[in-house]
Length: 173
Image 1 (tube, one colour):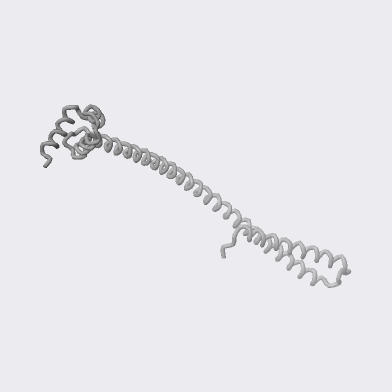
Image 2 (cartoon, rainbow, N blue to C red; image 1 turned 45 degrees about the vertical axis):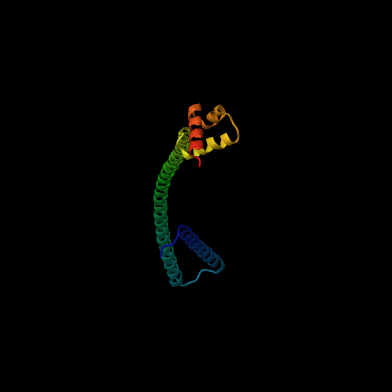
């Protein structure tokens, strides 16, 4: 049966207390009673007491050895736990760095996508053949804006704006 350190210490304390009580009881009895004439009884008592002391001493030594073994085992376990904790701390730090790098990369990719989307929109606006550019030019012309104003808003040359409007009027049925 594997007892914990506290249980072993408690058991040792109880046994020592019992030993102390036995010694006090023997002393009390020996002072209270007059010495007996027969020598056989005190000799038996003495042998029994010596056996008890011998066994108690062996038991105390056994407890001491067990306590030392538990102490050594506890120290080893604490060292292993400290090493594992340090390893986990390194892993956590590396993970946090990786997450930071991934978040930065995502942010950079998002910005790149937004730049490409913006440049794609600007390219579409600069292409006079694009349907949305033609529709915008024709809408602005219906509102009565001048060719120069339409060219600025559509980011086209004045001649391109004129061409779009002329082609629309010629092929309009």
